[in-house]
Amino acid sequence: MRTIDHWLTSPWRRSSVAALTGALPVLAFPAPSLWWFAYVALVPWILLARSAPTGRRAAYDGWSGGVGFLLAVHHWLLPSLTVFLFVIAALLGALWAPWGWLVRRFLGGRPSAGRAGAALLVLPSAWLAVELVRSWQGLGGPWGMLGASQWQVSPALRLASVGGVWLLSFLIVAVNVAAAVLVSVREARVPAVASLVATAAATSAAWAWAPRPEVDGHVRIAVVQPGIMDGGDRRFDREEQLTRQLAGQDIGLVVWGESSIGFDLGDRPDLARRIAALSRTVGADVLVNVDARRSDRPGIYKSSVLIGPNGATGDRYDKMRLVPFGEYIPARSVLGWATSVGKAAGEDRRRGTRQVVMDVGHGLRIGPLICFETAFPDMSRQLAEDGADVLVGQSATSTFQGSWAPEQHASLGALRAAETGRPMVHATLTGVSAVYGPDGQRLGPSLGTSASTARVYDVPLAHGVTPYVRYGDWPVGGALLVLAALGATEGARALRLRRSGPEPLVPAARRAHGSPVRPGR
Image (cartoon, rainbow, N blue to C red; front, side, top):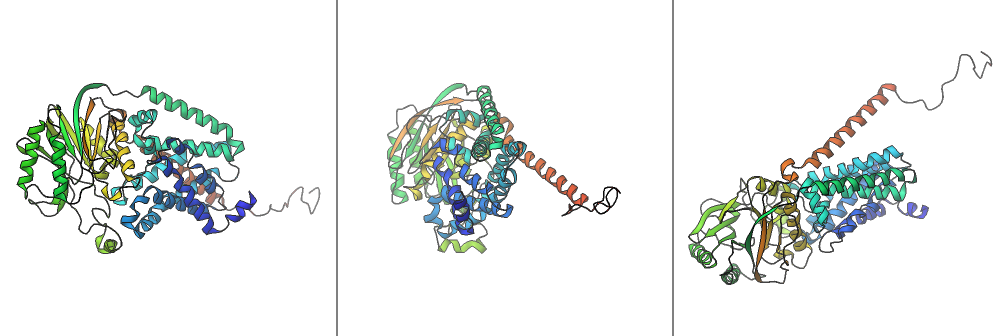
């Protein structure tokens, strides 16, 4: 142990180790999908920050680990952003610096049982605060939230219906903290075990109490995935061909992927007529996605457009949350140079102003989301509140074929479905496309990145209200209250120390009775 501690005295070596430990949780996400690993993946990072010689060094350990985490979770962006990915990771990684400091504050040295017990509440709350800040769309959005690693675990999906992905993240960090205490703090093992038992009991109770979605209907929805095609015209021809094959299958809706049409339908009425003909052939509306400069207003928009047998129905959703650098460049006047070193947007796309619920007939209402909007739990929750029966995500991860991105993106649909109690259709151009029931369980096989096909899914419908839809992001509110209480306590403690003055370095000399100079006096 002393040899390891001596080796870690080098700031660069220690920062490198922190970055590696911070990257470990990526193995819990798709494609590896080692979901169980999430519950111990943070332990090495926690042990490292706990052993820091100073609070400042622990903060650096948190920062370096955050850089490693972000690079690992977003590594597939490297061909697009190149060196800029490291700049973003370095900036956002600083969000974990306070978390690293808190790890040492509560677990450093020989913590008492009370301090270790408090860590089981404070450290998960601090992690949630980090996820909250980085979930802001301007900072890249909530991609890689720790709770999202549990997308294929049925009990976890049930808990997501209670507190969303936030509750899952909180519980995962709490288990990691308890495991780290068990490994490193002998004096606090009893409260650590007690906390694990209490956590298991609480989650089991929440799992048993959480209402299960009650299926009250079904709808057949077709996903059209054309695969990799050179040129917008060839892609459209393939989508048209695949859609025509769906005739006579009693379909309620056909969904095409993001950027499935590269021309504004106002400028290309011939395309609108061809899609309307498809709608008549299939007997269902077709939800397409247009990525083009609009003919009725300035600028480029990404839009979900519903086409019926008589043409456009008038239902249109313009994407509201754009991908930083991919669809716009923040502060372009300062950061515009990013276009010269990567595949950043040459022109900023325009934003929509409101979410839309579309009526596709047959009593079916859908709530469209575009691309990484499916990562935002608040957007799907709003659509459920507005009366959507089915959530529909239209995506295109063509740029990242061969990476972990398509699987990661598709897995988010399971969380959004479980949170809202609404089925979710995730349709892409080139895979992975997948459909999830109102409990978050995948329906039928997914369409991989090598598929060029159309598939029909029998989708169960449910209309109950989950606790998460009703009460929102309450785990985040609870975490912020914990941190506020911690801040108030630390502030009061600092104030008491200031009023009492610094403690003397040596005992005061006794000048009255019992003086060592004059015995007996």
